[in-house]
Length: 125
Image (cartoon, rainbow, N blue to C red; front, side, top):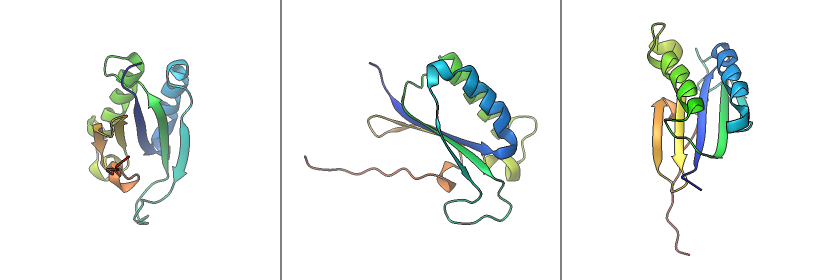
C-alpha cells in the first residue's frame, strides 16, 4: 500500500528533452504521465511565457529516497536554483506540486499556481 500522490510538474519546452529522458529511464517505476502542452498561464497571460510541457501522474508513490524521485527533483531544482538560474526564465516556468491522497500538498516548488489549481473541499457523507 503506502501513501499515494498526484504529482504534477512542468518545464518549458526547451527544458523538456532532459526531463523526457528521465521519464523514459524510470518508466517502469513511474508509468507514463498524462502530458499537456500549453503556451499560456491559467490567467491567459502569455507574454514572455514559453511553451510549457506539464506532466501529471496519478496514484504514485513519491518518496524522497526513491531513485526516480531524486533524479527528477534534482533536475527540477537545478532549473529553479542551479547555476543557470534566471528568475524570468525558470522560476515562473518550472514547478512541481505533489498532492497526497489525503488532500495535503506535501511538496511544492516554483510557481505552480500559474498552471494548475489545488482545490480542497469538505463534504458530509
